[in-house]
Length: 396
Image (tube, rainbow, N blue to C red):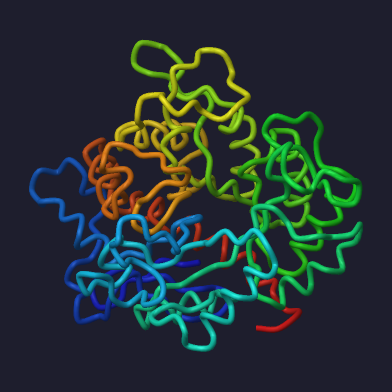
């Protein structure tokens, strides 16, 4: 992927498809080009809305079927919410992964997108589809399985899932998921011991062959390291697309979010060493907690609400650990900001404007606009291009 200057603004050219992907609207708006190291200059007022308009924003996993807020952001018409805004205008997001727990759900959502029941959205099957979604200002959806569908001890079914549109798959969810039997368990969840299983290794190789992103958000450190070793050998990046940082601390030296579910430094470094991306999740309960011993269970319901500043603290920690080229954004909730299980945050982290508020705070910390665009979407875009380019089998 190469950055080019087009009509006074930045663009991204895919080395795979040779297509020019403009990071925003048409060249008529090109005068708003990204400035180098603008942060802290004092001469140019930071306009976060303008930055989002000209940038590609990719959310690692963000579901679109919540109706809790009544905002209308998302399905069935992604081009118009209750205020007449597109998803991009309401949230800043261009492309988002959606979790589909059953193959039947994936098939149903694919039908909704391809038969016209959903308006203003398109299913992403290839890097060229990302180009087209951004060009036409259409919300792009990537199908993601956090708990894989039945394998029955063989990798043969994965081709079928690929043909149906699956493009991201997590290897293991938790000790309580349905994939614990021999022939189904691929590795260890966050509270489990052990690494990649024999069938798990075969699945990783098959996912890479097909052009499906291998995700390890919930997987333990050893499973991630084992998977990273295979991926590095095949020169393919992996992701942990929705995690918090286990080792981040508060200003007074206390653990901020000491959960087994959160990623160790070793896990995030393993992802980074493949050229991959760690997506920082916005699900509040795992971003803050009072626990000073490693907590193996989910957070209690009465813990203090996480804030947008807690999220930024996790981002800054992970950037300092693995570098700006390997960090992305991930709601791990719904487009409108609603969180699962009726959890809430500070009214900002759980709002449609959450990513703009994150970017404002990172800019205030001295992040340049170039670096902000990497976090906003260019890092995930790089991974998707590199993995999807291998998609020379199955239906496209």
